[in-house]
Length: 167
Image (cartoon, rainbow, N blue to C red):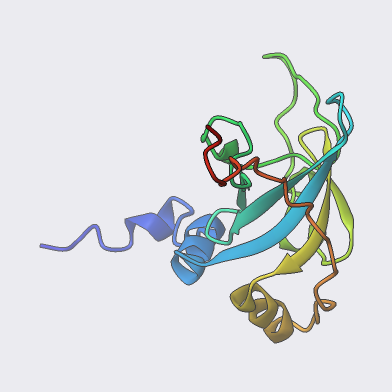
């Protein structure tokens, strides 16, 4: 009944799928880094806060913008949709280009508190990480530096003067 049991071995199969193994070991485990982008492209200098999510299951990255209260921006926080991201500057390849190697993509070891990282053509400064991320790096033998002080200026919200009515 189960005569084809060892067919995988005869055709060269039976090996461990590394990507599937990584997914099974790290599903729903996400490293979270807090960073800022010093936006010099706007007429007024602006420091924009972001959160970088690195998904350990498939080495994909998502970048979300944290909007300050009454910033005047549309509330669409996804800055970079979840997918694998190349290291360094952005390049556009054609259909005849060679497939990318695994080492050309960002991995968890590229992130460090207190460092600048270029992602998607933007230079982000990582100033902190959450507790799970710190524990993950501690267990893998790399201690993350303490959180860096980054003051994000609060925008003054104009308020109406409350006073007596003059007649």
